[in-house]
Image (cartoon, rainbow, N blue to C red; front, side):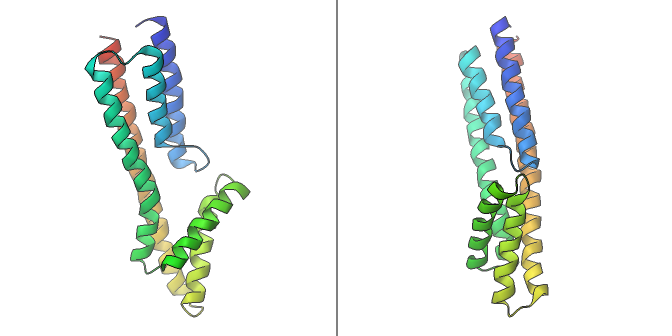
Length: 169
């Protein structure tokens, strides 16, 4: 590997590790930052041969899967727990507000508060039923984190194959 390729790999790895941390810490970007790290590597070191192109396509597809998991699992689980679309909309709105007001965990707090408040009122002030929807939402978000973390590790591993097999070999 040339010195430029080594520098590109270090920059990409730093971005990717920040992206992996972002899966767990909501204020940081996540899988798309891992993808961006691979793109930066390709732009700086080159997409030589078929391996770099194939791996970038795979990383792009995995990034889309990760984003879809992030956007859908919590809401889908809340829906399974009996949450209404109004509660899910309130959850998303307050998550956005919470993200800016109380980073890094304000988004999660806002989402839970919005879901609980709407379900509490909708269900005739029945806290137990509202909590059931919240528990499902939190479980869905937990699964989203676990799955996206696994995707992130897989993405970094694929990039590693590109670096070592494509550039190092």
